[in-house]
Every structure is written in structure tokens, then in C-alpha cells.
View 1 (cartoon, helix red, strand yellow):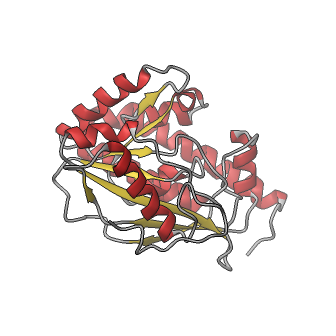
View 2 (cartoon, rainbow, N blue to C red):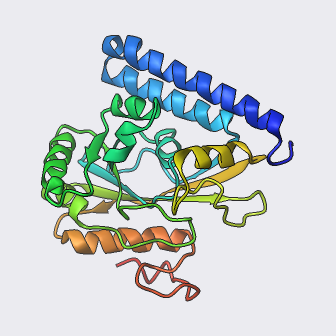
View 3 (tube, helix red, strand yellow):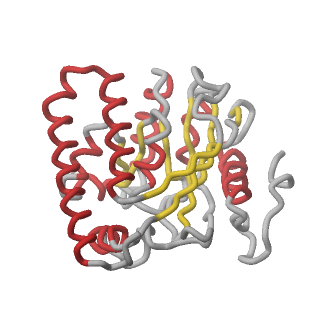
Length: 269
């Protein structure tokens, strides 16, 4: 295992990362028009898994990737820590994402993510939620599994913020299921790591440099049981999903003070 901040290792990882981005761009530009939706999904899953290998991100998956609710309208609802979250989730689940519009302007990555069918939301426009929800609703009705980061922002991984109910409205209207998903980055000894966090004043480049400087990063992906949205208000559904995510991460449920803990059983209605 190499020491953190080793300039040789960091340079090699950056070079491999750049090459991998070019591979992704080539696949998106040349192969995607020819291989259909299923082929595109398989390509992006392979690309995401390979990205984690290049960055020495060790993924541990917990839960079933083919839940009993599959085949019904499904919305994946996750906490949000890092730009890596998309690829961690996508390495295990076939889904499309709702993401902030700023990502579309990221060099190379923005174009690559857009080619996957990502729905971009303009957070500064109050009325953009209606457009996004309409797109979400159509995708869900067509059988596409969609994914949202319902906190609306990133954290350093030490808290779960309240989930916004507005983006859960389409799955309520579709009488579908919401699947809570929890992401946790840690050191090899199990302590929470903020090395992958993309929050605060940390830029994309600074975040990338910090990630490639780590000997390794462990990430736990918890795929929790889907929740039927029928008969639920979007706000209640959002609160339930947030409580489930906080419970499995052993963090306080949103609205509770840090350090108070949470009883996962109490969070389940």
C-alpha cells in the first residue's frame, strides 16, 4: 500500500483517470448510438466499476440489487456526499439520475453524465421543479428507474439532512416505490472519511486530487427495502426515507441533534 500524497502514485492515478475519461467519451460518442438502451446501461455500469478500481475505492454492497418491487415505477432516494456517489450507485443499480445543472458544465465528465440521460435541475430557478418532475414522471411511467439525491446538497458524511419531498411527488403520482439508499465513505479502520466529500469550499479539482492521494477509500452502499408510495404524502415519504438512511448509517435522523443517535426500529412505521 502506498503512502498518501505520494506524487508518483498520484500522477499515475490522474493519468489513468484521464485515459478512462477518454474511453468513456469515445464509447458515448461512437458506440452509444448503435447499441441501444440496454447496451448503454451495461457500458456505463462497466465504466463506473472501472473508475472505482482506478481510484482504489473499495466498494462493499449491502442489500438486494433486484428488489421485489422491480418492474414497478421505482425512485432511488439517496444521501449525497461526493461526486463519486453517482458511480458508486451506478456500479450496482441500473438507473438514471437527477443532478444539479452545474454538473453539465464540468469538463468531460459533464458531457459524459449528460449522455447517460441525466435530468438536470436548475436549483436557482424556483419553478424548475415542475419541469424536472414532469420528466421524472414520464421516465417512471416508461419503466425507467430514476435516482435523486434528496438532500439537495452534499454533506461531509457525518450527517443526513432533511430529504426534500418535492422530487418524490412523481413516484407518489405513479403509485410506485421509493428505495432508500445510503452511502458511507470510511477509512480502512471503519472511521468516517471525508476524503471523498465534495462539500463546503472544496472544488472539483481539489476533491479529485484528495481522492487520488488516498491509499484507498472504503465505501459502503446500503440498498434498503423499497417503500410503497401509495397512500403517502410526499413529505411523509421523504421523512421516512431520510430516517431509514440515517438509521443504517447510525447517524441522527434529520431534525435531531448530533450525538443523540437513532433507533432504526423506531424509524420504521
